[in-house]
Picture (tube, rainbow, N blue to C red):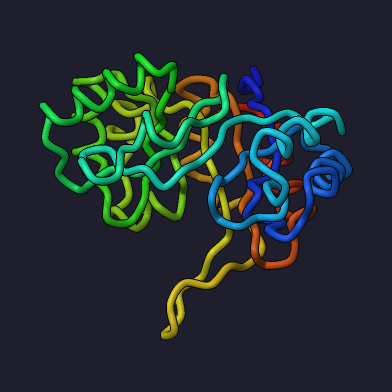
Length: 234
């Protein structure tokens, strides 16, 4: 038996200076099928505007899996659903406060639903730990984007927690990192980095997995990811 294979590709953070056609051609050349796009970070794909950039990526032959913004669920000052429209119909990666107020979260998610926005909460430093994220997802049904570095930064997760979280996990983002005295540094991806992702994929399918590589090895990183996900399920 093989695992259901998600769509694979790059985050725009992998090639932040690339224009839309260059980004699309790069991921297709590496045998990926699409990208996730961070909005508002000055990446080259959005230099001439968000929607024109998306249109040009798609015309070049790549998919757009989801987009990411700086919104923060649970923070009333950073949930500008009405003021900062996002391109339909893409899911939107957002952050979350460490201990979000349930009533405020319900109000914010209702506003997102009314606006046709599907938020995915990213595992990220400063956000809820896995227990808090499970509670949030079980109460609200909100989707989760598992960034493997972010998962480590909020304390990691044991397998029982990954099982509880898995019904809400929509996609993942992977990267190779090493910790130094100067902080976290990117390095080439290895199969060892993908242990939690492989387990999640045994529990259920994901829509997409993207590589955010700043180690200068995006093609090799995507190949490592594809090889790991092509192996038989345990």
